Length: 181
Image (tube, rainbow, N blue to C red; front, side, top):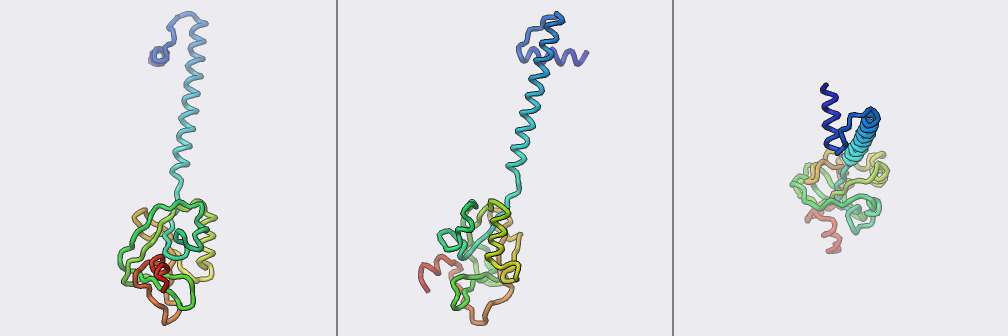
């Protein structure tokens, strides 16, 4: 009885006639089944799209040659720039003499200017890892670096490259490069 009322209710919502003839019942039932199947299929498709949109995206926080308009930014050409921010004090930005790139160290005293990108693929992350020399221990990779956009990957050194490496006092690689020191 409940199923019959449910079908009747569906038929009424879909503006189907409620003729009692067997042929008409069969046509209505087939039409309702077809519509229900189509609705279920559409719902599954929408859920798949929503699921794919929620795919985890890794973020990366950069502070040197990977910054926008800097030489290595091409490695991030398909990544989305989310924004720029200043870290809380606690890092130090250094430039090793004779080198054209900076590095950061933890347990410092500075705020560092960084950009955050949403990575487009694992391949992009792997290219950056290779550029930063993670596999050979040149840089350490932290995947939980705190940013206003969420946890991000950041690359840092555990120790100075050379004892006389100069600290970039502004905490900004772009500012340092613009001044031309």
